[in-house]
Amino acid sequence: MTNKNQLYWSLQFGGWALYTLVNYFSLPLFNLQLPYSGLYFILSGVIGILVTHYYRYVIKEYQWFQLTILKLVRNMLIGALAVTIFYFFALTFLDALLFVFAFFVFHIELSPPSISIDTYWAYFYLSMINVYAVFLLWSLLYFVFQYFENFQKAKYAQVVVQSQLKDATLLNLRNQINPHFLFNALNSIRSLTLIDIHKAREAVTLLSEILRYTLNSEQKKYVKLKDELSVVHDYLELEKIRFGQRLHYEINVDPVCNEIQIPPLMLMTLTENAIKHGISQLKNGGNVLIQANLSHTHLYLSVRNNGMLQEMQTELDSSGIGLQNTRQRLSMLYNNKAFFEIKQNEAETVTASIQIPLQL
Image (cartoon, rainbow, N blue to C red):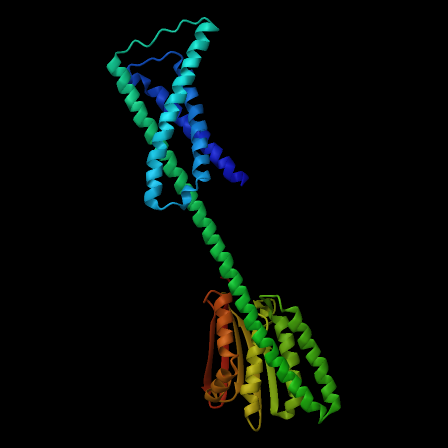
């Protein structure tokens, strides 16, 4: 607000100072030499500042910004004419006071300008038109500035609303993911309690680490890849307790990728889908390979597992999680600059790939 007021007063003083100087130096064009002309034009500039400032108050008080374009143009034309008349009355009145003050107080004899009546009226009419044009221009610039400012405010408010909607959507997507793999993990532990109490205890420990990570990342948009890989490792160990020799996994990550930021639980979701919709559907189980590589522009993540894409696609679509969720989050977080793909590489091998831009 302070900067706005400073700009307003700077433009007021600067604009009327320029107007005063232009009028003062244009007097020779009319072969006109007014008594105390310098003081007269300084006075005209001061009156201009005061009149336009009050005019601004009227505009704001009567909410001209709420008017239609036609009504606004009408008000501008009439308003500029009204302030022009008021301006000349005020200037004439103060000019008379100045004359009286000079004559009776300082006893200065001021002779009227030696010009013809035609030249005087020509100067008067041109001055009226000039001042009217100045007030119209002032009105136009004021409204353009205000509309531009209101447009910027509306644009900012729209961005804020969109950001809030985006955050709410992302939170909803993340809330979909969390119970998804947690419930599966609990089901795995429940099965283990009937088979192997020792492994069930190990599974509870691993699950507690997963829960801790989930809670800590709840309010985060991004986490380090190494932190996500840690919880993925715990999850795979948890599932390995359940599947035994039916599950083999490998995590092959270039160390330079560890500090790169990724959306929380995204790699976890792909890994969980690989287990649930791929490995668990195979009688003899299979392998899961997680890889991460870095280029100058992108981080490349992939989760490869044994299985058939057509069967996985059916399972993923029926669950309501998985592919659509991943695509939505990537699209919103990276402004459609990230890439996600899942495809059948060869017989019974499916790869889910993500490309994340390093800079937006």
